[in-house]
Length: 167
Image (cartoon, rainbow, N blue to C red; front, side, top):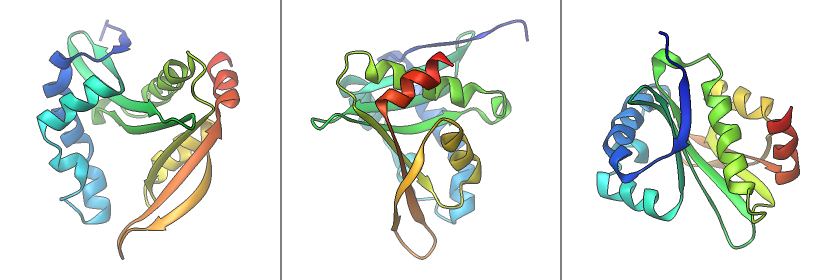
């Protein structure tokens, strides 16, 4: 390829590329759970732009193309909630998801507001579960949404994120 992937804060100009990538990336999840009406596949551009304005959104670029993205925010209790970690299918299994996860953790913990990190995925999403476990997350709860989907919430302390990003 000759180009390296760079990670940076997303801008409003990235919104359309992020939304298209999100739609592409969540096709496999929709197939896995038999649910093509899941929120990432129905999110509007305006809703995504609102997330860009209110939270922390990072993108990974290969040249000008957005090839991965992740979102996060810290609540009043200090819990950093990370969501919608997506990597273009052609770039999966090359460590980009882990790099992006470490980058959002570092960004959310930078001002000291985050005391813990939390994210969730579906119970059948084995690749996601493995990635999160490799990065120090442990399951803390399960919520059965319907007969097809159980959400697994995973968490870790912010101090373990600092270790993971320096290791």
